[in-house]
Image (cartoon, rainbow, N blue to C red; front, side, top):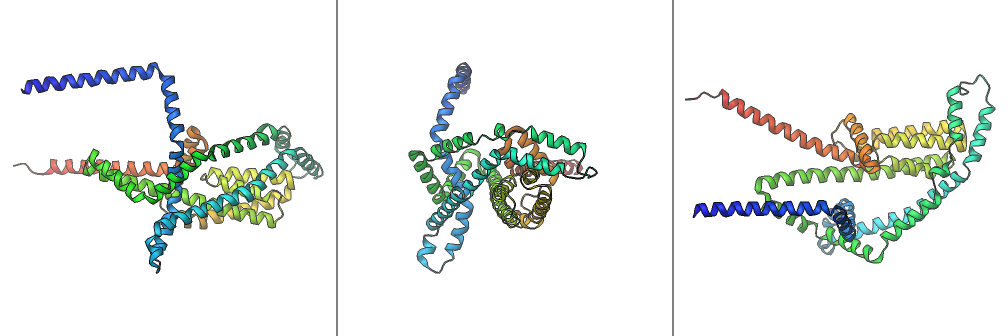
Length: 385
């Protein structure tokens, strides 16, 4: 009987192995068709994925609002805290989007169009101011002449095609605002926020059933750590970018710097990327101000922007982010460089939280191996009877 069971198990094993080989062979032979099918599948579920992403982004404000509403003295409010928190979070998000779409973006796009169209005029004026400087001026050097010549050869229209930008924007908006997709996305995000407790319970039950108690606890621990890091980083970077953008826009507007809103928006946006973003944004801002406002205005603008960036780096950002990531500046620079090289801007943005998660995993692995080594040492040192 035992021999029959063993033979049956072997036949089942080899049958499953043969089925897997056939499946892999068919996938390789019809790779293009499989790729198309996978692409089609992701296009079909894209509203669902977008809804989950929106729910993920709105989780922090919704949960924060819910905690405050639950402390309310009014029973109706405290009882309906979750539903009201989701509603308020959506209202805030819609207000922010409306402000950006109707106030900020039109000014930014108008500034870009004007800058592109008037670039040659700005350059000629800059060249005229430069030629009026004394010959013994330290600014009149071979390096500056080379920079001015390189600027002369730049045609912004080759790099910034306003018509194409508008076409891409309209295309993106038309995709997002597709009636059915938008409806599914919003419904999914609302239900995900309302049912987040039940979703987490179900996920824990599934991991417990598949992996057992110890492994499921470890998965839960790393999932919570990863969530905390990503939530903290994404939310804090976005809030910090908004604060920096507003501060710089207000300061440059008071200084009557041309394209103050564009520069503030650009620096705030680039500030999302640690280290490199701020450097690139400030360099571009100085170049824009140098061309449009002259050398003196560019110097004063750079001084003000650098001071505000230092205030942000040393006071505002630490208050928002805190020490939750606990990774060195060298690791951040390395992570951003690698992330940007392989995955572009998105890779640069997500490199820091990914590096923080990997650091936790590596540290835990090292601690585990050290404990195992200590136990083996103790076992060897114990006397044998």
